[in-house]
Image 1 (cartoon, rainbow, N blue to C red):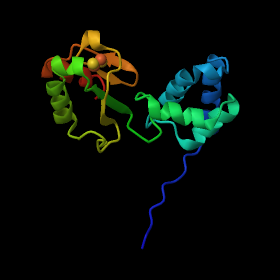
Image 2 (spheres, rainbow, N blue to C red):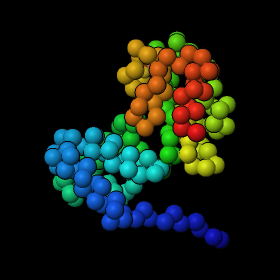
Image 3 (cartoon, protein in one colour):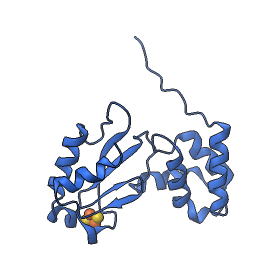
Image 4 (cartoon, helix red, strand yellow):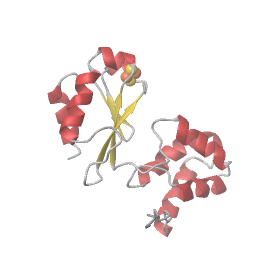
Length: 166
Ligand code: FES
């Protein structure tokens, strides 16, 4: 029987320097941990916080690694698992739903050709169904790498937004 082993993520010197810069920008302030994790996640192609990176940050701040994992599991903008270069987060909460998020969701799936949780063949896109991320005033909305795109109430508007990334 062959067991597949996922190679451990390696922190290159270049990445370590970039992470150090993020920590400097946040004054090594542990109360800014969510902002730190968002900025660090953005440095990584698959938009997640790999385990060695979580431990690196925990050691450098310093902060308990369990606090980092609490953040990674609590905030839907963060991920501890590899995602895609552009995770397309579709809000599935009430205000977006009554403003047409079902059509939006279907259009995103049709354009990208994947179901939620799947990654496109080129590793660029995936779809995530998430709860309200505070953009109800522009419902229905999606969020891609921290940026919100709202009023996506027609398939054409959705296509226009996704075209920016293609
Ligand atoms: S209900 Fe969708 S952003 Fe709030």
